[in-house]
Image (tube, rainbow, N blue to C red; front, side, top):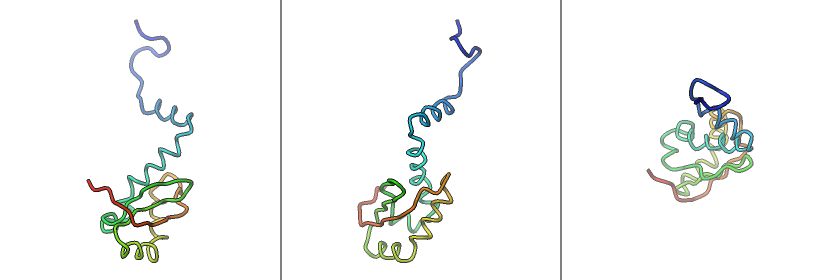
Length: 108
């Protein structure tokens, strides 16, 4: 006996999950997780080896950097460029501000 409603097969889970997420107001959370996914592509291998996104809240991205030398370089010369590149990779411009801090990087 087929379940009531749709007959004739399974429904794809992707649209169902997106609908539930949207209804629960979690869409921004899912989109913000894209920052972590696109980071290496947006900033390049050299920067990604020394800096990683830590958190994104209300448009402010906190990035952990492994040394004061890299922190100074990114803060002074690359901040705007990184923000612009990240926002181009995201569904909409989410990163309004970047804060660089010395912190521990997650290594694979």
